[in-house]
Amino acid sequence: MRKLSSFAAGLLFGLGLLLSGMANPAKVIGFLDLFGAWDPSLALVMVGAIGTALVPFSLAKARQRSLLDAPMQLPGKRELDGRLIGGSLLFGVGWGIAGICPGPAIAVLLSGHWQVVLFVLAMLGGMLLFSALERRRAC
Image 1 (spheres, rainbow, N blue to C red):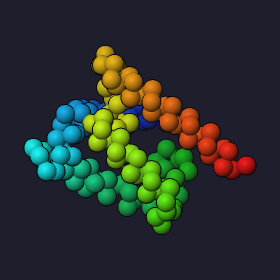
Image 2: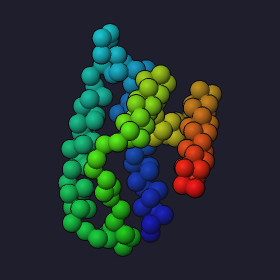
Image 3: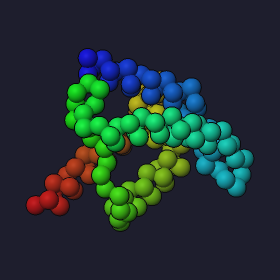
Image 4: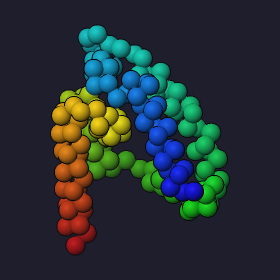
């Protein structure tokens, strides 16, 4: 049941990304172009996503276990630090340059566009580099 619910959640997420335009790099770059031909439509997508998530997250805070009886794992850290700010800046710069971020990249991976494949390979390389640096930092 957990695998089926994970698949259903991923499918719903991917469909939402495709229908909202978040998987279209031109639309994302239009949204990020505040001083040019700004396209505010993705702001509505973000507001809708935040609004939709408020109730489930509020309910999840009061629970110790998920509906499928797995331990509830919500972020506990509240403070900002250099790693969070640096990672956010790096993510934002990459999103602005490529017009795509990890979720939409996975959603359109099989589209046949070599740029998406290159992006996903670079993303995986970055994840491996991060893991190696984290292991080294822990020693």
